[in-house]
Structure formats: C-alpha cells, structure tokens
Image (cartoon, rainbow, N blue to C red; front, side, top):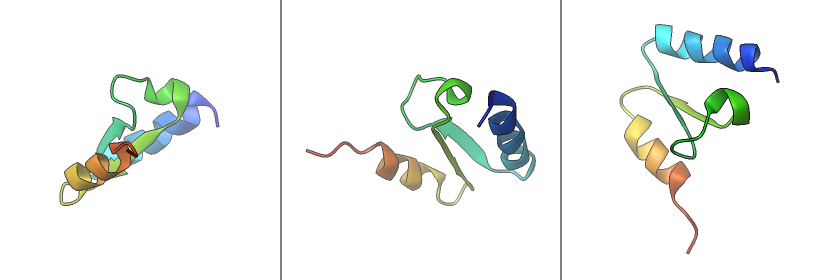
Length: 55
C-alpha cells in the first residue's frame, strides 16, 4: 500500500468519528502502515491490547 491509500482510509475513519493511532507509539503511520483504528467505545482497550508486549 502507498501512503495515500493509508491516508484515505484514515480520513474515512476520522470523518466517521473514529480514532486512529500508530500501533508503536511515536512511529509514523504513513511510513510503517501500522495503525489502530476504532470507535470511542473500544479504542483505549483495543490500543492497550495491541500494544501489550509479550513477557
């Protein structure tokens, strides 16, 4: 996927009222293509689950 493909998807999520963030905090979503996208009801828990590192 190209950065403009990712950007278009992110825009759709934001316009629908969703939230987006990189999976790895501080990384560039458009460069890596790793993104968390969800609605407000599940975003925080979903992000925490995806970012959890195996011990």
